[in-house]
Length: 355
Ligand code: TXA
Ligand code: MG
Image (cartoon, rainbow, N blue to C red; front, side, top):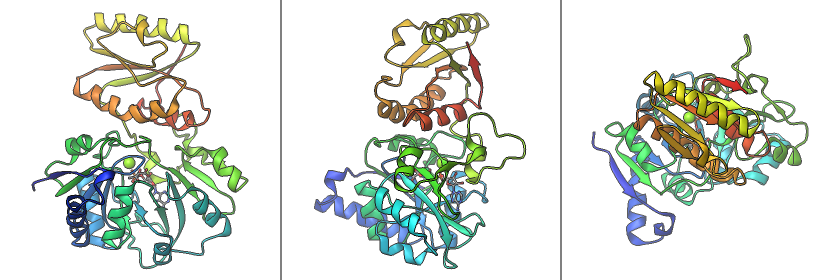
């Protein structure tokens, strides 16, 4: 299969050429095909979520286990009627506060949604993205669009169209290239099928922000801190897999900043002497102090948004450069850093060195 990489910036949406490109993409979706598209979080791999065969094509393209459910993306509140039922007052409050935007809400599913889309669950994950290209595409397709992140299973989520090309070339007919995404970390997932909101995956929208709208927020214990405790099963099946992982052996180094820098340099030297290619993922504040084969800053500690936006691209670059050992600085849990730390921990397979 040939994969067309079609440039479509949000500014082009209202030009004749842009409209034509969008029309082609929507036509493919209506025909049951898979199209990758930008959202404000990461690129998605979209197909008609109400069509069993179209959903199955997503699993095939991603190489994803069929029990890991997909998120249905909508562009208008009206579309909710067809996919979810018994929506609580509190769920409505969250949707009104955070949609369109980087939040996915788990609701009770309607019969009409195929279990192939929800991985066999009786609940459904729904999200209304804010990216103009995503919104227009969903509107034109006229159906809820099932879309996981557009990476092959186990790879970091794509934050640029070229990342999607790396993973999906030859597997899907079209990628809409809307440039770099804004947030770079997948949406916050909130389960609203119980009495109180439960965060199943941290994201740009923090637990504190959710709690301000609906109080009593808790975090699924299975996704906190360390490797999954024995017997604890995350409620979002996808949080179970070792995700976002670069090929190199990655370690998170934690402690006072100057100790971290010293320890990383020490270990780098040791590993280089053993013949390994070593990389450091640091921040603007300390980046000048490292000696390694590859040294990358993912932004300033004063700007978590920048760090979130460059994390996955940097992890992909590590694979391209054939890096064998990666040392990464660590981050706190305040605000967006909570989600960033969660993804870095997963990328490192929870390998943490305390200094
Ligand atoms: O930002 C995002 O959410 C991106 C963009 C494309 O919208 N999508 C995304 O999808 O990250 P995916 O498939 O990579 O991650 C979806 C997560 C998985 O961990 C999955 O297990 C969980 O959502 N999930 C989906 N449906 C669920 C359900 N009914 N109950 C619990 N977890 C669910
Ligand atoms: Mg994913």
